[in-house]
Length: 505
Ligand code: BES
Ligand code: ZN
Ligand code: MN
Image (cartoon, rainbow, N blue to C red; front, top):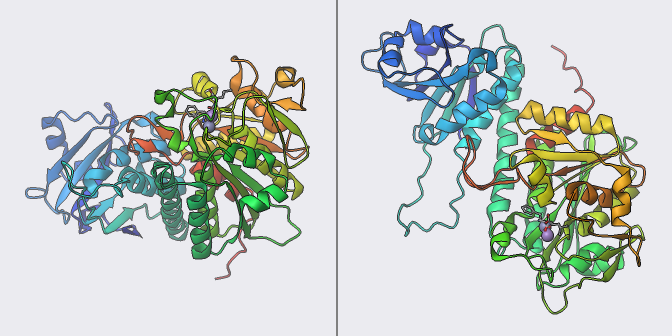
C-alpha cells in the first residue's frame, strides 16, 4: 500500500513522477483547469483534441512546461462540470489507476474539482486510486503469457485547498485507505476459488483478521451448530465434505448498555444448486456466492480500524451447497434456530435457509437493527440489473438510510417492496413456510422468507446478486468480486455512531 499525504502546496511545486490535474468538459473552464491553464497545458490538450470527457486522459511530459516540478502531468477528464460528483472522481482516477500504479510518486488536485463535500472528495480520490489498481494475481505463477505487474506506487500526495480543515482531510485520507483495504480484502475472498475458499477457510480468515484488528471472534463448529439448533446451516452444508461454520464477531465501541448494530451475510462458499442442480453455465460464478459474507467480514475489519462509538455484532453463516449422498432433498423439512420449520422444495434456494438461522440468532441479541447482505436471487438481477442492489425490510426509515448510504458512497441501491400479500406464496402444506414461491417476484418472496426470522427487530435485506461481482471490468474494478456493499455498510455504521469526544486544543 502506498503512503498518503495531505498538502496545500502549490501543485506546480510538488515533486512527483505524475501530477494528476482534472479538467471538466465544455466551453466553461471547470475547476482544476486553473492549473492546467497556468501551466500552459491547454495547447497540448487542444492538440490532442482532449475534450474533458469522463474517461479521457492525456499524459504530458514535463520538458517544456515552465515552472513545474513534476516529471509529467496527467490531464484527467471529468465530464460536464455540472455533473461532477464524488463518484465521478472515484471513477476518473480509478480508470487511470493501473497506469499511475507504475510510478513511484503521484500527486493530484482531484478533490478540488468536486466542490461541496471536500472530505468525501478526498476519500473518493483515495478509493479510486487504490481500488482501481486492485488486481487478483495470487494464482498467477508468471509462467503464463504475461507475468503479473508489480505496482511501483509508493507515495501519493493529495493536494487540497487552503480553506479546508486539514485535520478533517487527513482523517478522510485514512478513511479512504481503511475502506479500500477492506474492499480489496472482500474482493480477494470472493475471487478465491471455492476449492480453497471453504467455510473453514472463511472462518480462519475471520479469526486472523479479528486478531489483527482487535475484534472478539467465535467460530461455531458443525457439532455446535447442530446442538444450537441451526438446522438451515446444517441442512445446506450436509451434502458437502466441507463442513459448515458460523462466524461470530463483536466490536465494542460504546457502553454495554447500547444495543448493537447486527450484521449478517450469505456465505455459500460454492452454490452448485445442490440436488436441484444448476446448469454448467449457472455455476460459473458460484464461487462468488459468499459475497455477502465477505462484505460483512470486510465491514467488521474497517469498523474495528475506524473505531466509531457504536457496538456492532456479526454472525455470518457459511456452507457449501453440494449434491453429495448426504445432501438434503426436495421435500425435506428443516428446523431453524427460532424453532420455525421450512420445507425445502428447491435446494438451490439455499441462501435464505442459512440466513434464517443467523437472523434468528442475531434477533436474540436484541440489536437496534439487523442488516443482511446476500447474493440471493437471480430475480433481483432481472429487476435492477448488474450494478444496483435491491433492499427490502420492515422499516422504511432504515431502507431509506441504506439507499442514501449507497448513494453517498457510489454503490447504488433501490428499494423493492416487502409486499405482505405475497407472503401466502410461500405458505407450505407441511411446514411453517416453504423456501420457494413462484417465478415472479422472486426477490420479494425471498425477502419475505427472511422476514419470518427477525421478529419485530428493524431489519433490512440487501440483495447483491447483481453488484457483488462483475462479469466485465469497470471504471475501478477488474472482472470478479467488487466488494459491494462494503462502502455502503461502513458509511451506515459510522452514521449510527455517537460523535467522537471533542478533543481540546
Ligand atoms: N446464488 C443464487 C442466486 C444468484 C444467481 C446469484 C445468479 C448471483 C447470480 C441463489 O442461491 C439461487 O440459486 N437462487 C435461485 C432461487 C430460486 C431457486 C427460487 C434463483 O435466483 O434462481
Ligand atoms: Zn446461492
Ligand atoms: Mn442457489
